[in-house]
Image (cartoon, rainbow, N blue to C red; front, side, top):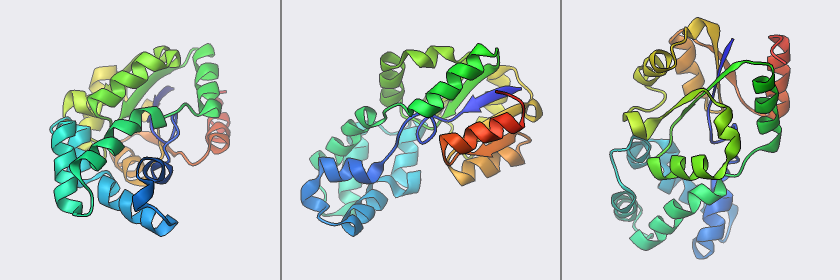
Length: 205
């Protein structure tokens, strides 16, 4: 069984509300204010942010787009949030432990992540466990993003694997649904414990 992991929300903690509250406390006095700012900046990872993930918008341009669209946010404030993201992506110890155990058992490991190039470079330089992966696809490097069908076809071809014999693990329901529609086996990641249970049911651990 080939195993294909997402990054943020699966292998790395991703708490955007905490991030914006830390970087822009003056704009997030309440949880509701933080919720709105997260929605305004990240757009559910669509819109401008999806183009950043796709590698077709640079950080400076993204900051100016966010500032123009949101109004109450300056480009410098938007850029501060953009620049703070890599350090906020900290490893999820339990999932990394699963990854190491899967590697020890000889499973073929791959990654497929929506991520801008600067973030991917940061993670690759900071975390040696990423060397456990045989290969990976970063959206910005191929200018395709999940949940578009094209990136799943590209990943299968690049990895040299058959989707039907591969398990795709992602925390975003639209990505999981798109992978399933493309013929992959899937697991919608919610917690490391639930993921471990799913892997055990498949006799992978």
